[in-house]
Structures are given as C-alpha cells and as structure tokens.
Length: 279
Image (spheres, rainbow, N blue to C red):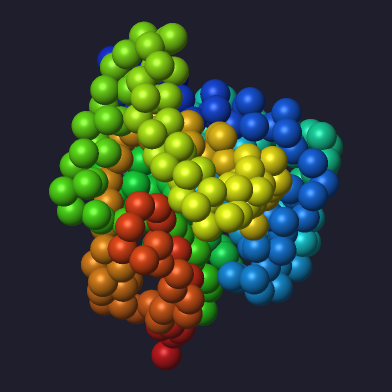
C-alpha cells in the first residue's frame, strides 16, 4: 500500500494531505482542541462510552476530540503521514491508551473494513470525496454503522461547471514540482483572498477578514492549512445534497442534520441515523 501511495503522489494523482496536517500540528492549542470537541458534540451528541470510527483521521484532531469526550476510538487513514499525525496526538495526550487504536488503511479496502465491526458513530469529514471512488467509499462507510448509530460526513458540493474548473486546478497543482506548487496555489487562491479582503474592507470590517487567519475556526482548524488542503485536495469528487440524501435514505437512514454551503464552494455536512433493522 505504501508503494501505491508513493506512486500516486509521484504521478500527480494524489495530494499529500498528511504533509499539510503535520505542519498544522505545530499550531495545535488547547483552544483548538476545545473548539473541535464542542463542534463534534454539537453534531453527534454524547460520546462517552460510544464506539467512534474516524475514517481518514488526517491531523488526528477529531479522533483526539472524541477520545477526550470519552469515546472508544478507532482511527485510520490512507496517507502515512496522516497516520503519523494521529499517532503523535495519541502518544502526546493518551500514551499507551488501549481505547484509541490507530491504523493505516483505505476506505476502499473491503477486506480491512470487514474486520472492524460496527460503531455507534462513524465520522468522516472531508475525506470520502478524496478516495478516488467516492460512491464506493460512501457505501463502505454505511456498512460500519450500528443499528441506531450515527453517520457524520461532509462532502464537497457540486458547483457544476465550477467544479470542473477546480478539478483542473487541483490536477495542475499536483503535477507541478515543489516550488511551482506554491506559486500556482498562490496565483489561484491569492486572487480569491484579495477579493475577500476587499469585500470586507468595503463593508468596513477588515478585522473580520484578518481573524480568519489568526484565530481558530469553529472546528479548531486554521484558514491557511484549509486553503492548502483545498487547492491540493486530489482526487476530487463532488455531490449534491439531494444525491447524498437519497443514497442514504434508500439504505435505511434518517437525516438528522444538514448544513449546506449554500450551493457554493465548500462542503455540505450530513448527520444521518441508521434505522433499527432488527425485528
């Protein structure tokens, strides 16, 4: 699997998410962790004693948030450096903890997933659209949810023609060598950031824009590393809220929370609950 990952990165077919999250960990503070905990609880409720699966754990922040809230956590990621990030947080905050397991695996590997059992909460924020086969990953994720369990996912919104433009930019970014990635990313994202700053300036609220860069987000994340994740995030697939709702409704799920990005750029967030299929 390591060779496959390295070959995909070398050929420009995959972004190194873990490299970005490794840099993010240098900014990790108690405030960010607390924000992550609060946001997670606001969506899924009480976590104490619940079995929590983090598919694509990335930086490990939300696995940490779940564990601090008392969940029994299983984290996995396809990116080796993301696995290293999650492992680092476990060792830093819950050293030798038997209730937090971290592994390297793929959301597209049915043999591995079959070994996991089912969980009270399956969490995958901004991950499954990066697997290279989103619909297969969505199907695999739902099989891991216990009866009456919660599935919390977020997926990139389908913007139609603009999504095709972003696909082009992401492909280009990942095909470029080192320094040129930064140049290309700045050229693409810089214009958006300048426009955002000018708009806030016109509205006489420039400090609001500056706070995007200097304060933790609601989820405890960081604006700069979110931008790097966005421009680099490839493979890249999109969906509409209706498509996701129908997909999971047909599989026996009820929609509990839906937060959309208003039809624009970003992720739609879904919290589903699996209906009890037992007689």
